[in-house]
Image 1 (cartoon, rainbow, N blue to C red):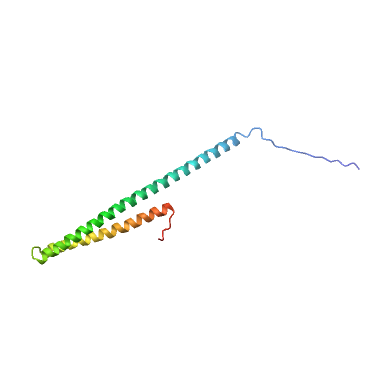
Image 2: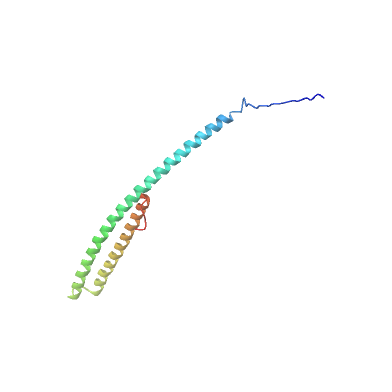
Length: 133
């Protein structure tokens, strides 16, 4: 008996792949560049947000300090108005107007205080500090 063996070997070597490999490499490089640009944009956005938070906190502090001065002035004005009312040189309507102005100053002071606290907490968040203090 004669046994016949055969062996076939087929190797596929792409000689011309219609520039698919070159195109895939170029697309990958473009995607990498786009990712780098998105990262740079995210860094710039974060820096801008931090600067805005810092500026907002500074402005809130100045508004709070101004509200404190206004409050002190309105307290003094109200006390003077009470004295003028007691001696009869001011009507009750004018005294009530002075009291309303004092209440408005108190309200403004409270609003400015909590705005300042909020803005500093936003800044603390961007700086990575704990928000529970």
